[in-house]
Image (cartoon, rainbow, N blue to C red; front, top):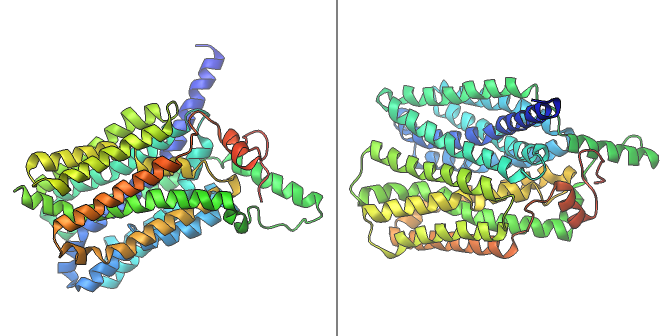
Length: 443
């Protein structure tokens, strides 16, 4: 093996290592959501929680409002202070929050832990997604972003299986599940210490400082003014992404409410069967991400690829809306939505949100959009129990509409960025170069 080949291999391994370290935020995010949901029933019994208190925990947990607030704050700090400071230290903040949950002796400790953990994972999402987009090799940005999505699907699978295996231990079992996330967060904090700052962000910061110095403003403290985020081009991109992903996320966030109904209807009420069907759904998503999204997204028409994924999910929901619930219908729903979701809204939201905004506003935009989506889901979740009282059919049709409308928005306004570098995309959108070697001008 010659020196150039060895150097290329080392560089490739470094890219994948950085992607995995950044993408593990998705594992922790999804794992926290599922672990929190799995533990609520046990916590309710242990602390005699009222239904309103349980609803409050669900609304402000890492699945909803606290994660949205964390993303809003973390995204802005990520653009002002750098990606590394946020994605490195927020894991310690997350671990601190989990200690409240692991050793919860009263309901207030549980609530505090859920909020702190939610703020931390929310802050980590824009930092990690931005870093993946900026560190990925040219022509492989979609493939690397797919790794983060695989990790997002792995989180629930591991947590579900752990919860099932430890279920005989009751509350202690849930504490152990959260403890595994605590240990992972500490390991991730330690491993991320050796990661380098994004060269694209460093170049952008340097360019603004140099421009400010030439203008005689040596005390410049802001590199990407928030007001620039609200020009016509950026607002249009945010509305598109929030519409496409936010509406879909209402469906995804509600899935947990009607899946138990499906299991009861087809006569499989055991916890083991419930976990099995959910794991089948996540496994289908992982396979779809790896074999379809990661292999095609950088090479084929992204509009058509997205449209195919959205269509599969609509067909899956129509099975529930049109036909009597049987085991084949339930399995068809799980497989179609799992496969379609693998190269559908969430995967493309991560990819496109990392491409459509200037470097010094990239994390700010992602944090703002993620906040709107998660906070919106938090408020929507307060009304879902009321909707379920009107019957499953009504809710199924509402959710089918969410998936269809989200897919339509994505298909109509999807950008064609396959094969393009971040520099090329920014030149086309903003007429301002952003490369690793030449500093972009932003702010």
